[in-house]
Length: 116
Image (tube, rainbow, N blue to C red; front, side):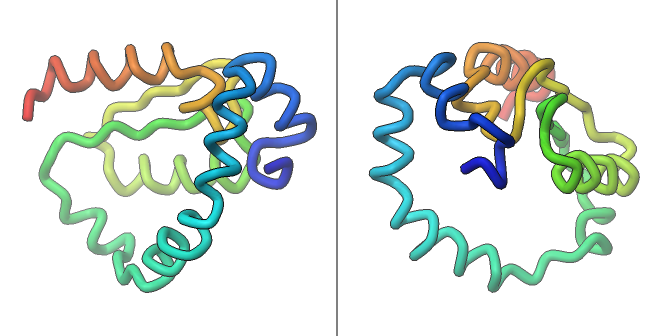
């Protein structure tokens, strides 16, 4: 978790989101590695494909995310200039756990502008 969310990730998550969130993350780890990761590795979606998107896009990143995630976010924004951006201040890559309210409010505002 530290490699993705930075030093002290476990303790930071425990303090901001609570023990139950950490327990759920541990319970879900097999699904991440056995189902989600293989599916992502098989995905053949390129930046050329991204540039063809003509639907509303919300690009979300934590302001304290590791450089690789911020660089990927910047590359995505470059290829999707129409994308709206949500930068969650003080958050790392695990922003949906540690800054759930800010993420939910940002997504809700986006969906109000772009109803399904």
